[in-house]
Length: 153
Image 1 (cartoon, helix red, strand yellow):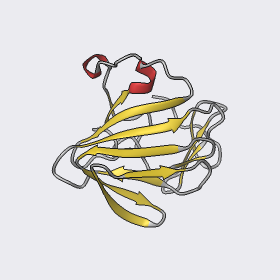
Image 2 (cartoon, one colour):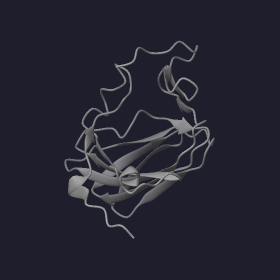
Image 3 (tube, rainbow, N blue to C red):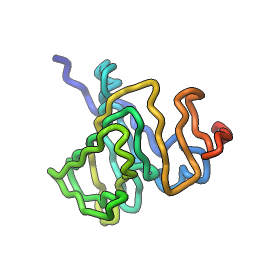
């Protein structure tokens, strides 16, 4: 068993989305705990969402299961079915190819901290139902619905 030292795991701010879709999650902070522990079958991320931050653009995955657990604070889970407040101890699960667009938005005045767990599948595509964007696993980047790639950062 290897204990991970959170203080030594790099924090990455923002997302790799192409502009303008990178604005809403710009203040999100992610630590890749699974990578730091050498995990290859699934990913584990510690996410900090300051007030106003989004976890991501609303999306769903074709091949990856996704699970979110709120460690502290609260965030609004927004899905195709509406909105729910998730508080510390609450969790949500999204099976692969469920076609349920989802993301978290912190509308509170305190930072929310969440664990995000997902399977790793090289053939996974992600669809973003609110915007003209798809993650294409073949090219490893984002495209428009018509397949035109967005410029890389």
